[in-house]
Image (cartoon, rainbow over all chains, first blue to last red; front, top):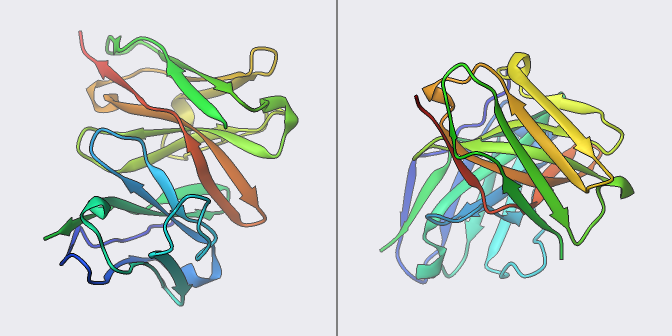
Amino acid sequence: SYELTQPPSVSVSPGQTASITCSGDKLGDKYACWYQQKPGQSPILVIYQNNKRPSGIPERFSGSNSGNTATLTISGTQAMDEADYYCQAWDTRTVVFGGGTKLTVL
Amino acid sequence: QVQLQESGPGLVKPSQTLSLTCTVSGGSISGGGYYWSWIRQHPGKGLEWIGYIYSSGTTYCNPSLKSRVTISVDTSRNQFSLKLSSVTAADTAVFYCARADYDESSHYFDYWGQGTLVTVSS
């Protein structure tokens, strides 16, 4: 079965750029998307189709996908961006989620 | 604005069947164009896709759960449902319903319910 691998945690200072990676076999040949989840809340879609932002998502969120790695980039990270982030892809009629990355802003 | 709301028992006994319903408002399931989905999250863990259903009744399920999962749709009530049989404590989780938009090989969840905690315990 297809697997997506994320680092368990990433730390960033306020105002700096945070990068969260998601790795999978030939992931660049698929579409990746990203969700933000804060404690006690439902996930929110922040990036879809590799690099598109849904309405209402700040421009500081961006995405890329090439080779075996998709990357979520948060520019000018704010304290409110502290959350868990999950990547997701679709492979042979199956939805696959990454294990999640806890982003700490400190 | 599409809204989804999960409902069902918060406590299920081991070996029994977990049943949940998701009511959709602000959009019609029968209109097509989306998959209607179930996703769960074990306490303190990541997201796990359970499966989804199209308005026609076509379903896709996580292979690891497929033998225990039934997903159905009631377009007249604008609802879809999940049944998970033979539950154990390992099935204790927050269950979310969500709408999946799709385009060729891209499937993503753009609207989510608030989630409902289901505990499996005697």
